[in-house]
Amino acid sequence: MNQYKKRHGLIAIALATTSFSAHAAMGSVASTYGLQPADIASAQALSLFNPDTSATYYNPASLAADPRGELTGGLLHAEPHVTADSQGGSMPLIRTGDELPIGYSQQTLLGLKTNLSSLTKVEHPLYLGVMLGVEKYGKQMLAFKSETSTSGQYFSYGRQPLFLTVGGATTLVPGIDAGLSTRVTLHSSATLSTQSDLAGNTRYESLDVSAKPVLKPIAGISIDWGRLLCADSDCALKNWHTAAAYRAYSNTKTQVNANAVIPGTIPPPGLTLAISTLDAYQPNIYTLGMQYKGERLRVGFTGEWQEWSKLAGELDNDTIRDQANLRFRDVLIPRLGAEYRLNDRYVLTGGVAWEASALKSDRSLDVNYLDNDRLVVGLGASAEFRDPWIFAFPVRLDVGYQVHLLKDREFELTSSQVNGGAPYETLKTGGTVHAVAGSLTLKF
Image (cartoon, one colour):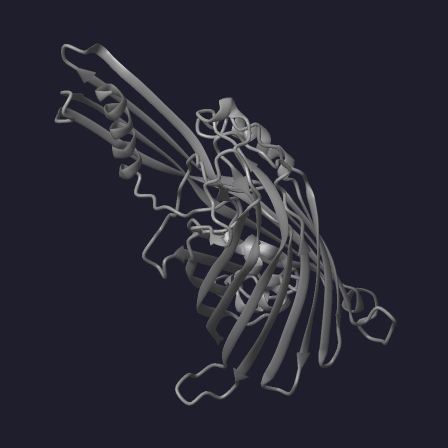
């Protein structure tokens, strides 16, 4: 029993040294909700075509759609309210109507976009964009939790890890813009060795913690058909745009190695423990969209293909989830959004999307993941002040709201320590998720 406690104590110490916090989730704030309020308001349907700093993630080519630079700062608050209703079983743990303990996401978002050609003698424009998101309103660089659960844990929502993208764009020919970005994630490792007694008192400790950045590419292209084919005349394609983007898979990963020697009980080289786990996985994402942009009305439709099926192979090397036999499906997400300009100052935005769950398994031994298909609806507004009283450049205020309506789904809970791994309870999950965001942008 003492060795059992000692082993888990070492793991807790090593995990604590990596400075991660609980309530993290697969995905990222950009793919779960949206980065800027405009992305949230349109349910990401117009994100392929938006020229602001969030383009570094959705479609870096769109950085070239607006020659103005910008500096933006914003806040996002998202609250999942997911309930679990027990449908019976041999050992019910959940009361009907219980809300799953999913943490809020509270992001500080910062963005910068500028034209680098002003630094050179080359007149051809080259745009640079940077987008940064930090959890807990800037106080938490990383959010991470990887565990087994007897009462079920949610797959999609929770605190989000550090978000960082850097990209550039340029115009290839009039009407065709191209861009390339990189998303930065961290792979961390911790190594702990110590000598201890059975009471847990340690000495001769050695601790090493490191993290390395991992870069994943994002590429995009945008076509303005009117500018490309009929720049000097009217034609049927004048107000139409097409865009496509590819975002490579990424994840945060942690490896923990602990070694303990207990004189008289565990001789050298000691008890060696190793944990390797990943979190905040984003699959390969392919996006294609069309947009109509009139004088006042802008309407866009995008289809987003997400290759979640490859996550099953990634989890084979995860020492926490490898026993769960988790299965995932590739999903196609349709998104439809519209923007209407009331006048020179005010703009209204709305959007809708249907997001099928990537989690194919209804049963996952010990891990007990839960997830739902969801209808996403967004609303938002923006106001641009072209001659603000204190700034020398135009200022834009944006607000966005998004609600996720979760479709009910049933899961079977299992544990290798209960009923020989047979299901001991059936749950039906559902509920809503609310997200609200606001930002202030200086155009220059």
